[in-house]
Image (cartoon, rainbow, N blue to C red):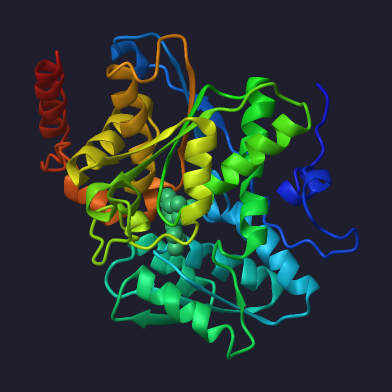
Length: 362
Ligand code: AN7
């Protein structure tokens, strides 16, 4: 066997494609290099033969794709000599900012909507020592405040309006191209603040312009019906969805996302909370892959579009699973239908429970 060099994160991996000076002190937790898993069981039940791959971004260091952007944003903050960062967040950005700030020795201020952030994400921000400012308002209110406060206090914004965030996040498209040896035909992903779709489109476009690939995918992005400004054509005032990660009514990368949709020939669509949770469950039960609710919307989208014929037979589809299922255990447990059988701690009772269930599952 041959030894492979220790993986040290996406900046070192893709340095030639990233805007960084050679002497920058890189702040990394080994983000990126996430698995691209081909779905085995779900596609068998589709009317058309397609290849569906999931980019499992939940396996990043803090459990979401945000780490790709954060390694860049925090590296740049350190290079600029700044000591504090700030973000508004539905949860994952705050977790990632808190961790990378800790790694760099910076102070992180995170503004989160009261009561609407998944437990795992809150635990991360707390554990990494961020200063947590909980507002009686939603993500959009927090975002507005962050933009204003950063002009009045010495804090660097690390939301995706920080251009280095998208630079880091575009590397997911690079990895997909490298693993497939080509670009996919369709790329499906959730759409919230719209940074990620913009970043993927940048990444695909960069490799296309460098002549590394000869085509780019159609970008297909999905929103929760209760938080679907791209479907309504204007900001939504009181966004609501069980998928709290994408509970966003006034996306910051509005124009970039429309450009990605238009230039790629892709589309936007929406799903109810029930459909989102059903897709999350389906992926967990049929493929053994646990993603958070917001991430599952990419699966809901791909499946609907294959069933309707919008995505034709023979297509290669990639879906980004943006965050790990463990981020939001409450939602998972609440919707779980699996039986928890309570019996006495005896061989007889346990055996009986096993045999009864084997019978039921036949
Ligand atoms: C799991 O953490 O906006 O369209 O503040 O956490 O790039 O915003 C999270 C967004 C999808 C949407 N999936 O991505 C935040 C935040 C998960 C997410 C999105 C988010 P964008």
